[in-house]
Image 1 (cartoon, rainbow, N blue to C red):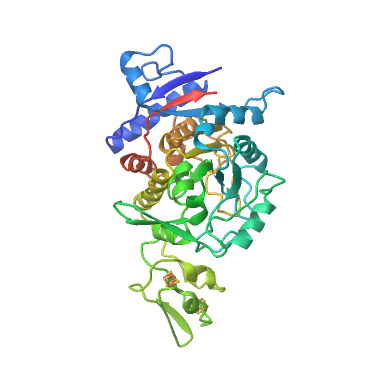
Image 2: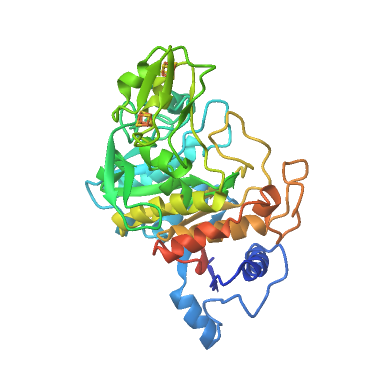
Length: 425
Ligand code: SF4
Ligand code: SF4
């Protein structure tokens, strides 16, 4: 069975944003049978008005499957159908080296997408004659994924390998996170974008995201997986940090490893303590992982709107570079309140919803947020405000984060649009 309805969204102001978000959540809720419909704004494919038809024609299609299954129509079959409807065959060509961009989950995290679900995507790519590989880039912070060896081991521990997910793991930015490709860009914040090289070298990309809450962006979905997740460590640092890192002299043991590795000669050593010269630092972040005692710290950017814009410039740059060769897939399953980079996963904030896919990452994230907001909050979870269906769950979790800003800025940069047609497959 197929349902189609469209929602048009033109962001004008913060007040309008709030009103629209509330209204849109009700549309999505209606589509899922949770609340009454709002007839003037839901456009069924066969019964819309002329004005609504125009909106539906300009909206980006977002394909969606819920999690109801039967023995004849299990999740493998539903995922294959979803990918087919979303146009995977037009984006992935025979003999492509296809990057399946994932987050393998930090050690201790349990909310990451299960490998068996990734296997369904891998099989669909293989059927098109392409060669998929599972990939992610090194993290900026020190953890189990900050170099390629630890990262691959961590991926394997979580079941991402040829046996569990059906494809090999290749860390996109090389052994030490410095295998970088630069893309020129004309943005408000950046003129050059630093990406993990394998992501750029890949012939096509399936950008697979676990949709969940995030403390800096409200939610983490396709745009974040693209902009932050595909950036090399240097790019991650430029998005996250306002200035160069600094040395905690209390932790510094004066070993000099940071000075030896610094490509800019920005680190001095005096009286067995290192210090970083901000004017010379190029923000490559190499020193952070080189420092065994963890004495080098990032100056985290505490302006979430600024952070969103920087992340979106990366997402828009990559979307443009791979236009016509990239599909985005959001899993709305085990929707935890925070990122999979944490070494734990808190109770889901809403019930499981389904899987959504689109060539437009902006429309996909907008639709995913609407689908989440249409749900009732899970009792006993971290979500204690905005728990009713239709209320903004991400504002409930992170009231200081205006998550709509990332979508607006992405639209302005041409990465996609907030208007979408939800196509239920
Ligand atoms: S690598 Fe770390 S501990 Fe060694 S000198 Fe540099 S800051 Fe100090
Ligand atoms: S971030 Fe890079 S350039 Fe800056 S001090 Fe560290 S190693 Fe040197």
